[in-house]
Length: 153
Image (tube, rainbow, N blue to C red):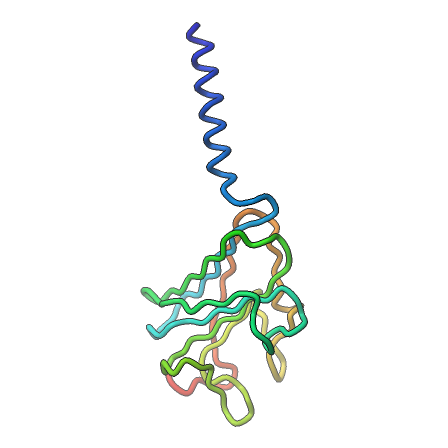
């Protein structure tokens, strides 16, 4: 009798644990995007794209303005369908709400991309920045830098 009770309790625990783990719909996951080492407390703006079409030139699929806490900005996107994505981020170091650029169009505020992608004489391509969300949880780390030097920090 005790063995049956143990088996029943173990089965109930497994069922509860499985339902807690499967909180997201099948075929979706959570993407956590993390930027560390920030010297300014100004916010970081994130953008998420799912295709090469319009990458960095049109409105992102998702976007978020995130506060910086202790030199770190974290953006968590839940229930994201599995697939390919590219992430961009920039820090608004002067607090004016826009990404500032020099006369040649190069950012004068820190920018970064998933896959640590860098462009050559311009921004990186979607292919260079592309990451694949193919599991329930994934973390992408970005580094921000000013390709032509920062105007202010």
